[in-house]
Every structure is written in structure tokens, then in C-alpha cells.
Image 1 (cartoon, rainbow, N blue to C red):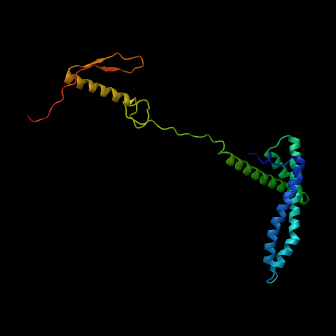
Image 2: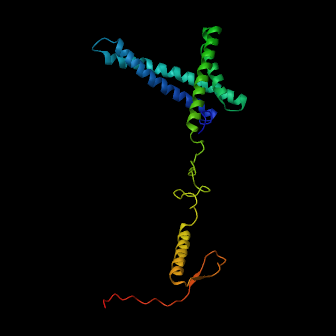
Image 3: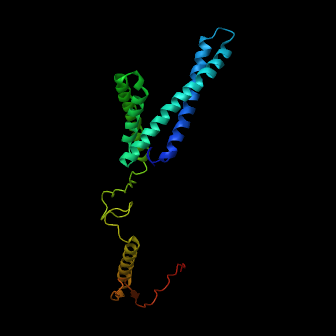
Length: 225
């Protein structure tokens, strides 16, 4: 987002731009003000006519006064830019003070100094408000993006996946298969005495178990003799 100094027109065109904008602002604002004032001061029955007559008489004068102020301000502003060779809020502050003092020069040195101080303070407030507004509008765009990482669940080994208690963060399927093979070995060995022949584990870590061949027991007969 550009600052008010960098977003304005270049200096030769800035004067005409400010003169036109100031005249339009003064004409619109003066029309509204003098229309309401003319309605209020006119007698009943001719209030609308009095309001329009007040606008026709006073609105161009107010617009012209604003245009003069805007033209002088832009002229002093461009002069400060040329002398200082940079664009910053100090140019507008000096231009406001010079404009206020120049317009009150016919009333004396004291009135001119007071108008210069008032113009400088007014432009300083305007420039400060513009800088603060730019900072507020550009602040959320430069904020870093915060990503919340999930905290490890208490009782987990090494911060394993949630839902698996401590001691079972490995492969539960392999544990179940090994337990099942051990139970089968003890059952066959206890009933038939044949046992199992265990082969050494391969390099991959898996176990291969082969049962010995044995004769099946006779099928019991439940016939009554």
C-alpha cells in the first residue's frame, strides 16, 4: 500500500488536480451549508426559493476560496519537493504553514504568523492520521502465520500416534501373531508331545515355524453297544 505522498500525481499535474478537487469539495459542501441556511432564514412560503437563491449566490464563492487554498498548498508543496529532493510528510506540513501565512498576510504580521502555525498544526494532524491509518491497514498483511502443533499425549512413548497407550506404539499385529503361534505350540506339545521344530530367524526379522507330521488320532465313536 502506497503512502499519501507516493500515491499522488507528479508535481506539475498535482497543482491542477488539487485545484479541481478543492473547488469541487468547496462547491458541494458550500451548497449544502448555504441551502440549509437559506431555508432557515427565509420566511414561510418561500423557504425553498430562498435556499436555492442562497446556494446560487454563495456556493461558487466558497468553491473558489477552496480552490485558491488548494492551488497555493500544491504550489508550496511542489516547491518543497524541488528544494529537498524527496517526498515525505514534512513537505505537506511546511506547505500548510506557508499557505496559511500567505493568505493572512494582508491582516498583519501577527495574524500571518498565527495562521501559519494553525496551518502547520492542522497539516501535521492530517499527515499523522494518514500514517497511522496506513500502518493499521498494512499490519494484518505482514503478520506471520501461526500454526498450532498438537501436543504429545501423556503416557506416549516418544510422542507416538494418539490413541495407542505406552508400550504398544509398535506393530500390534506382529505381537498378536507371535502370541498366537506360542499358544498353538504349547497346546500341541502338551497333548501330543510332538512339539515343534523352530527354524532360526531370517535376516528380515520374521520367524518361520514348521510343524512335524503326525498321525491324526482316531475319531471317537458315540454308538451305544
